[in-house]
Length: 222
Image 1 (cartoon, rainbow, N blue to C red):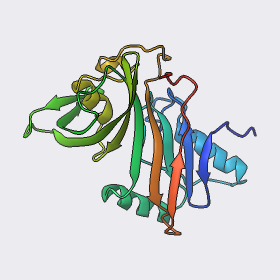
Image 2 (image 1 turned 90 degrees about the horizontal axis):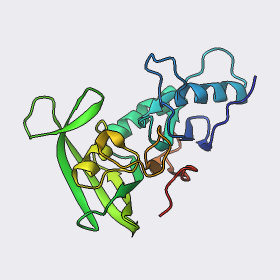
Image 3 (image 1 turned 90 degrees about the vertical axis):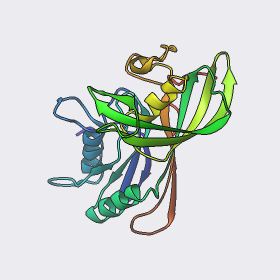
């Protein structure tokens, strides 16, 4: 069998981290399309010469149009402890986004209430049924030629949170047509949002793990 071509960023007996390309689903939700999780499972099965079922579960996910780090647990102990770390917000996740225009302030915090429906997120008033608080922190890294590179750190993990909050702030992500972003020269199945850095405590060895993902080939120059 041919080993799937994965960009492996970190791997041991308990964890596997890969650099997901834009356009590939993190998980298959019954669409019969390829997914990062299934390709990673095949990679483990072949590279580790595993027989039978392979234990592999995603810890968080990325939208199909988003690239960057996807973390998988390879053992039940790792999955349980990582899920707890996610709930307790002990895993640092840093994203880079290339956006149209520039924010009014070089850094800040965006707070909204979001409701998920019809494959998009919508800003709602506090107290609206189904709306949940969403908070992110951003920092301007560079500005040039009418676009900006922003570093984003999530305080919450809501559906399409970065995409809709940046668009609402007047700086939509390049390629994100769903939320008003200009094409930006990106492939149609990609937006300029990349999960670039993750820091966590190893679920078994309890040591610090830092994972970084290089930009994809289509990443806008700025």
